[in-house]
Amino acid sequence: MTWQQSETNAFLHFTVNTFTDKEWGDGTESPAIFKPTKMDVRQWIKALKEAGFKTAIITAKHHDGFCLWPSKYTGHTIKNSPYKNGKGDIVKEVADACKEYGIKFGFYLSPWDRHEASYGTPAYNDHYKNQLRELLTNYGEVSEVWFDGAKGENAKDMQYDFEGYWRLVRKLQPAAVMFSDAGPDVRWVGNEKGNAGETCWSTINTEGMAPGKADAKYLNTGDPNGKKWIPAETDVSIRPGWFWHEKENDQVRTPQNLVNLYYQSVGRNSLLLLNIPPNNEGLLSATDVMSIKAFRKILNETFRVNFVKGKIALKLTDNKLNTFIELKANEPLIIDLRKTIKIDRALFQENISTGQRVEEALFEYWDGKEWNTIQSFTTIGYKRLSRFKEVEASKFRFTILRSKATVQLAEIGFFKASKNE
Image 1: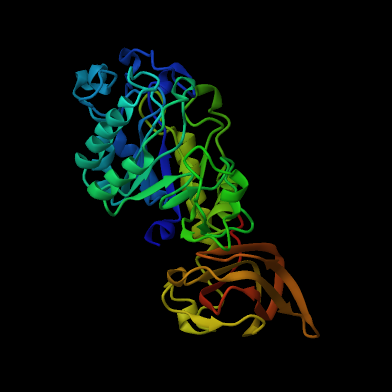
Image 2 (image 1 turned 90 degrees about the horizontal axis):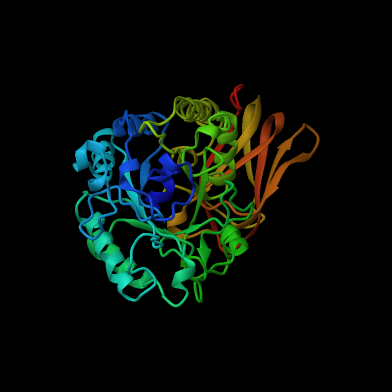
């Protein structure tokens, strides 16, 4: 629950690929190419903090196997690079900067390692756990550990010991949230385009599922009858690629595009994980920084004034999920503001500590003669954000048409979009 209320977290893809202009390294890169000239991790984290991101997740090791910390278990690390004459540790720099600026720290450790000689053999699982243990014990509190199922052709007969990896995280960082296709805590949304499903359940069934072996459509919508609470994380990059490429400097997503991603992820019961890759100088590029800051400014402007605050029950506008009203299906909630307002955005939230219950809902306005549909939608969960053409009215109606049980409605908000949106 705490993880989902963060709403927007940041990914930081940075490795030898940043200097070779590749998306996937092959493991033969010399550490000598890793030499950022203006490296400033504090600039990264300060920019993320100012743009409202709550967690920073660094690619401690990508598929190329190059480690951004001085791992004892391989020579393919930052300790053999020119950076700080081999005395650098970017994972530590990120962890320390996160602590300084008051945001949470996480890391991605690629299971696929194209450099490690033991990869593809049973011995690799021990190697991976050794590196995982280093990251879990030497950098303070870890908020999120990011796993995927990426696998090389030379590892067809090798099985990743994900259960063992997860047990290690539970033991050493019990408060950390773990991501993969199959959870165990949060799941992939099924695409890298920034789209959670219009219907998005936090529950799924994971039998027969593993990282890299999951149905993308199933992950996108979740399962109303799922037995496990594994909400969706929507990962997407601010650039066409996941790593910085100079040729993509004019293809950075605009603030308005990022706002749209927010509605399509957070606004559909997911969390937005936006990748902002540092460049080959070791900085977040100015264009990227300007875009994320303007993105946050637009959201702040849109949601600054809730037109129903003070007009309905306090527990529906106090920004607390554990204060709520109960609604049954086909039991309409009338919201009479007694004065006409203009709105084009609405927010609804459930008390997810007791589950996710809304299956279908209808939002309407009164035109003086009859009720008119503004929007109908399916799931709410943590948050549903509705966008619609401007409506001018004083009376509104919210009706749950179908639900799994009595709904605990925690928040309602009516808003007018920022002119910059």
